[in-house]
Image (cartoon, rainbow, N blue to C red):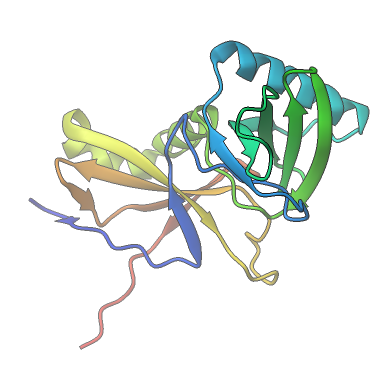
Length: 211
């Protein structure tokens, strides 16, 4: 099949999208150790509402996009395993400042325990972001043309890509690398990056081969 190969990505930092799931992350300065597990839908709703109230109170909500990327029940490993207190860690990602906001919520008492904002902390992509990245990319005529022959068999996946270099123009931006899969293989071209912060599609040229 033309233009198909198994793709191996080499980027400074990337992670596959797992929509609706994600690893729990906790404040870097927290002195306690937590184990995580999944909340009920009702607990998630309460935790997010309390966290967003705290975010608004601390004036961390701006006009910039703000997404909930993780909600995990947590337990202090040092506490009695029979403790009836239920805690939840809510992680938001804000585009402005490339900022993760982590809020620890006591669900039993329905109160916020702590809130920490952490610039440049990797967070998972959410479904709304993936949909926007896909829409932006597939609206480009050159991308549509490159993918036309695979249209009925095409699967689109995504990687969140980050750079550690402050000199890189994409530093601090929410950048997604889209992968185009047909069956078990990935197309080698087009190489499509979407800067969601700027709502800009970047087409990269494949690396030149050297003999």
